Image 1 (cartoon, helix red, strand yellow):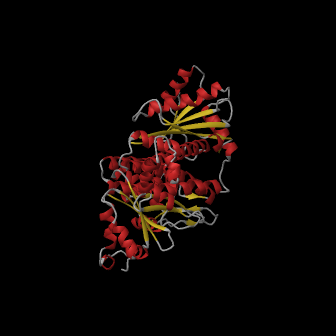
Image 2 (spheres, one colour; image 1 turned 180 degrees about the horizontal axis):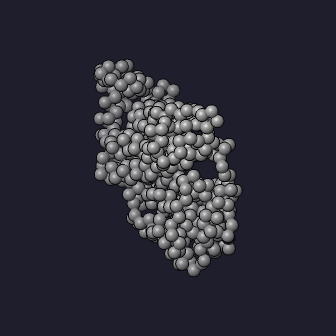
Image 3 (cartoon, helix red, strand yellow; image 1 turned 90 degrees about the horizontal axis):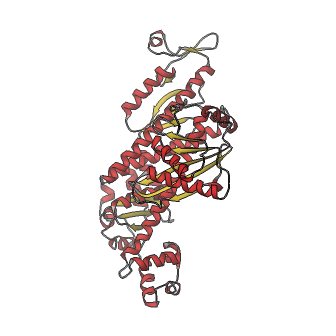
Length: 492
């Protein structure tokens, strides 16, 4: 392999510290992002003599052949490297990261909606077609048991089904022997069978959400235990499952046969919750953190069933340090509606809390502290998509295909997305700002003064020596040291 001389020199200068590396092709495009406990050891392993000839995976050989340049970003620890690697993969979607993730080929469930009688088939390859895909599912045995359960519960066809059209135009899904095994009727019209498919798809999407929540928890546990390779693998599956769910929601929005529009969904939601009318304005709160650090909250606002991003709000937790979702929820709900009350602005028709009874109680406590009457308030517990009320009413479980529940899920998912985006921004900013920790002679006070004066590490890096010297507490000599440090070849 002919590695350019400047690239060899760059690899030799790499530090023996944790970080993230970005491989680029000759056009400067990022083609792979990786993390390392030691940047020097990990990156240099790509360019060892004879490595390309001994590799058995063609895609890795192709990746090495395309590397024309690289960048590295030093971080403080392996957990920071894991977080930053994931953020950069999401941001840049490098070609070879996608290929390697796809190579894992976990099982998917494919439902071809172009068929007159859509069947639920297993596949390992997602295509750009009009089918719906669910997954990926890493545990194939559990998935097959779930599909068998769905066949009995909903009366759907799996990949081995051989339906027969009857003279009157109806279909016999199974033969007489199988008819005794399944509870649903075996003779149906195409329209009746399509309704079964819709119910089964809604059920399977709910299973996918449960699986996603489980994967996230497992990923966090692995990272806390410093099992970073396992955490990275789980993160890749989380990314893939998130993309699948996002594509499913996009398909549903574009599907012309969708049974209920925004007005109908709002009407259904008002009736299901016993409200005086459709909740035309709704606000939803979500808390996001990584093992108690970078705790933030989001609030999203829907008007007439659609996102109204001008009224979105983001919160950093100010009243305490640590991991307490209940205290965080009480703080942000109090801050939001204290301000609305002070400005004499109307409260929304419905407030939704991402969580169960604990989160609901915290939100209610915030309104009690404000001494104001709360608007209609509910929680949406993730495990079974259960609606929780703050009063004596029992929990409400709507069918997974119910338009009211689908609207609440869209609201909750948007709050979750907005909170996670803010969390990732803060983590990324903190990681970038940690570069200044390694500058000799720069104490906490001066470091804070620099960041306050320039606003961000990017603006500081773009500043001239003279502009740095104008910061409080800095003169030409120390400004020159800062400028030289930030423009070293190996500084991220």
